Each structure stands twice: as C-alpha cells, then as structure tokens.
Image 1 (cartoon, rainbow, N blue to C red):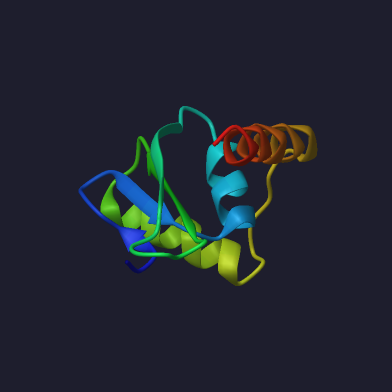
Image 2: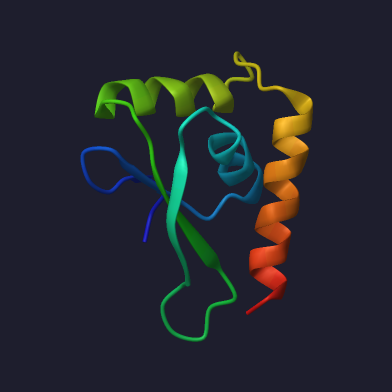
Length: 89
C-alpha cells in the first residue's frame, strides 16, 4: 500500500508525523488504523478529511515541502493519541 488518497476524501499514510499533522487539522477524523500486509511492522492510518482530493494533495504537498503550519499543541496532542493507538495494540 502506498500513501495517498484512497477515496474521495480519505487519505492513507504510514508516515507517523504526517499522520499527526493531518489529525491536528480542523474536522479531520481517523477512520481506522491497520497493520501492513504480511509480517510487516508498518502501521497505516486512514483519515477522513473535509476536503476535495485536490485540496488534500495540496495540503500534503505543502507539508512535504515544509510550507505549512500547524498549531504546536494540536500537533503534540495528535502525536500522543497516535502513540496511544500504537501501544494499545
């Protein structure tokens, strides 16, 4: 599985920091998290975003190019929630 838009307003990633960034955005919800295929230690996160496919691509590209901002406390809170999910499995 590759990171990217899965359905119209869903985005799947295995990048922990990108997942925290997305979850720190307003009105973004995690749909599910699941392990990779086979004996992989990868964990994939699926998010539902209130954005169009083009807007999601733009947001992710801005993140990858370090051209975006997120409220630091929201980002740290999202990282904490992700760690709790990972360690609860």
